[in-house]
Image 1 (cartoon, rainbow, N blue to C red):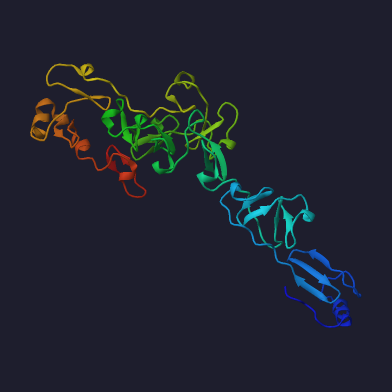
Image 2: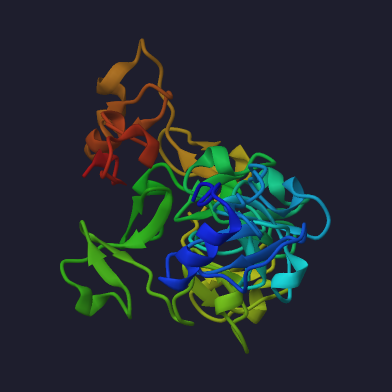
Length: 336
């Protein structure tokens, strides 16, 4: 809205009389009047009105980007308020923040990046949430979201020791799927509340679905990988089928190691060695596949890591979800 009048006072009063201007009276003097309506804010004197623009808002990524008394919104840093009188000219009080009459400040954002939060916290749904240590696994979309050598598995940062690369590392009846040992399936009826996807049972949300801790309560106050779950201090507090991961009970999809040293892998026939926590027959390039087949035809392939493996493991197209294309999962070493 630009200046509406530069004519004499009488012209202003005539205009007022026909409703061309919302005005509180005509007369001489230097006093100014200021008001806002749904279209904007205006400063008026005896000769006319001009639009009062809202102050330029400082861009922000979270509350820490803004000065005291301000919050971060979609429009930038905005001053907090209880009524219009607390707002700078050009703005009115909307949902507790000062905003131009025709603009929507949107939700208040404590954060949009991890950098907006302090140590031991991540940004989830525009709020800083404690995680890691004993506060439950941190949420993640990729391993780059995790710190301290942790890896992203099933939407949560966890220790690499809790993940699998090959199905032979899992208990009987389970397949290695995106780093998790999951039961094989043909339909969801055998998945104990979970869903059968691409031949494996994906765990269900036993404590209710969630995106943040704020959506969980009671006996399951922690949100981990989209499911509300119990907090814990040890595996014995989590019950069958779960373990305590960084202070939260989560489905136990860990591999099942069977050794810590070579002398635990003794047996008849060719010697085995403890490789990554599993008793394996090792081989060399010079021995090749033929050597492995003399041991057991089921593991008749000398893989690149010097271990006798099944054909699917020796010729694996993937050992992690990141090895596959968009929308694909790494299941039993095949991208699906």
